[in-house]
Length: 386
Ligand code: LRH
Ligand code: MN
Ligand code: MN
Image 1 (cartoon, rainbow, N blue to C red):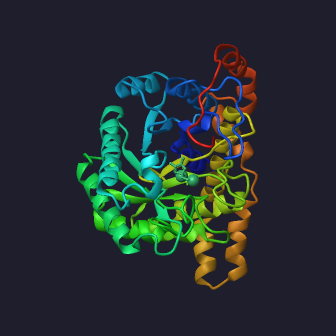
Image 2: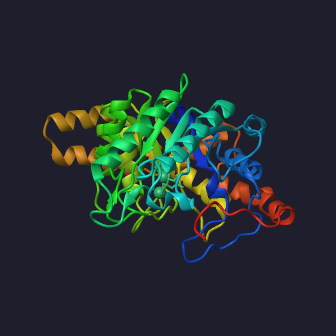
């Protein structure tokens, strides 16, 4: 097994990005359950994110969603983040919540709607300039519900045109991250349904364009780690939207439904050289019925645990077993790492960094939950689900 000191050193460099919308009220299309103490604006979302960082030391980045996090002064918002030991991460564009987008956004048959959507994407790059964010994350709800409704290939052309215009606008060090999702809200065709479509567009665009793997956006049984391995090999894995699913795009806590899958994904990341700057470890989750801040802390810990196990894999032993054709031996190397209890190692790492070994307990003791319930009335809805 890899030496614990090397595992700890690698873990200390991991930055997990939490989504601003995870701090807001959310729900399903049936009901949004408002919770007490929920942030009333983006500033307060960052205040909560700072608590996650304070207790985990591993979540220094926060993703924004525009317009859910619209403010007058984005540079001031970035300052607010910095003052709390945070930085602003991906800017998530939103071209799916206006009446104009009934038939799509950048793939819409009407050029005026496409222009409106593109303008929003370009505005998001302006916001990145102001916040210092490096990543523009694009997810399109575009698609059709009925055969014949629109021309599948023409929609791809429109998509390519919009992406090229956005790509052109990117500055030095900025990336376009394209996210795919196999269905929903469109049911017949989806314009970016899979990694292959996202990859084909990113390949044409150039090296600043990469694919985002949202773990909840695949059909049951999909081998996500294979996709990760392949994208990494091609230099096209931009990052993750981590979450768990049982059925569709459930947005449950990462590592809750299938910690073994998360481990297998992290094994490919570590083995493929994707651990380090370049691959963004973002969460894309909603906490509909559970308290939000502890759920986000738990999610960060779940990612750390899967990462620690992946780092523990004895790569030399694995390679030896693989090249000897030792099927069971190779599998045993992986399972040894997966079955290791890494919680003591992570507790030790936290103590060495001056943190409480138990972040959830430390949060509960901190009094923050009581304070926000007392001080904040009428929390903001995350942005959808009503
Ligand atoms: C779409 C998605 C995408 C959105 C987020 C809120 O299902 O995964 O990343 O921006 O949810
Ligand atoms: Mn996502
Ligand atoms: Mn999703």
